[in-house]
Length: 571
Image (spheres, rainbow, N blue to C red):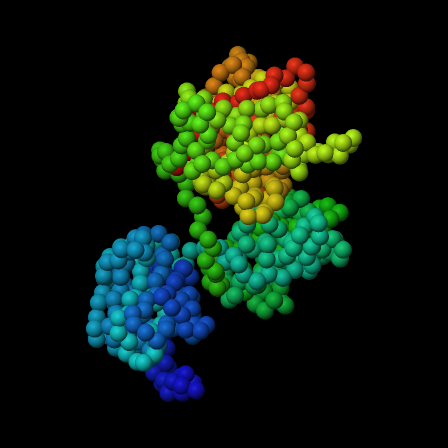
């Protein structure tokens, strides 16, 4: 009841504030001054009910932010980049600030005051200021009423920043709908939401029991009316040959803004122009006997009610700096540093024959090297193959595998190791990375695998670098073989393998010489989604046998050793 009485009792004050907002004077600063804050990410010290911070930057004078009933409280806006601030426009609800500050910051930690008052009067305020920063906040220290702080609009004007009027991703996390959805062993929970999660390793697909027919569609509710200028589709192989992009104000009446009868699949970036709250891909002819499936359906433009997407990782510094290394210095017989490496015991995948021990097969040699040793010795393990005669589960070989999953994960950088590989049929040394979500249960290959070095002991004149993802994995992974100058033998000496990994792709090198490059944009346009822009961890192992190298034979030397001189990460 008190809240209800408050709202009716303040009706005239609210109306006056709204009228003042409509009559707010035009910017009086330099001609280049623009509205920077609309649609940007806003956060607050607290929120009263449904009156969230983003309501103050949505350009709608009928929605508002409201805080808890306490002092102090604040609301801040991330402009997306550093900007020169020339004016702040505040449109207060009746619950206004008597004392408040306007502050600016480059990091949302250290704040500089641009405006301060102890005699605030509420209503619509246009405050000339001068300062620069990425973040701007209103910091209230004394309320004018017994309630909280409440703003219909918090507008920041100036130059620079990323601007609220620039095109941005509108579809992230918004509610989706579809003609049907698939949930079976081939595509588990492939619901519409998967196309709007900005996760290129999850997808929507039409139902395998009811949806492999024409037409098929998927739509997204942007939360409010938006001006659409771009749509990005990342297709699964089940793509549309003929389809439309449509918009609607109500989810029922649709208007085409793009149409084709020659869809190409893979990644399509469509420049469009249309207005609506709902956007739909409406497929009328499938390119395969299967249904329609999208890894990503991204809508860009202005307006809507966008949810802030997680920030994308930043590229390494130029030049990058060393952030992690292991030089394997220590006394002979010492074990790998447990603060950096953890053993990964058990059997390997790919029908490998070894059992990886708990560091029994890995030790320092006292000369600055890690020795990973494969031995011919019988070891029992629950994951070893069952002997058909005795019924026992044994492995005929032991070896070493270790990783940094529990100690060090990273996104982007230069990953480098100096390694000497062994020679012999059935041996399979490797230095590689796995997506960190593998450790929390996401199955391979949806987490992404980056192989930096693989050499088969039966052909030690060839090395391989490869990536694996849902659309390209196993024998279909994207990679290349390469050799040493003069067709030299990799097992004769140490060699340095490296991968330079950033937001544009991965470049592999051997002893400082580029051997293979992957361009993210090209992969998305020709092979499928790029799923490597998230944390990974490193793995070193020496496998024995498996589908690719085949088993050892009588000529394979045991023990066989893989020597690692160092591993270094630069960011």
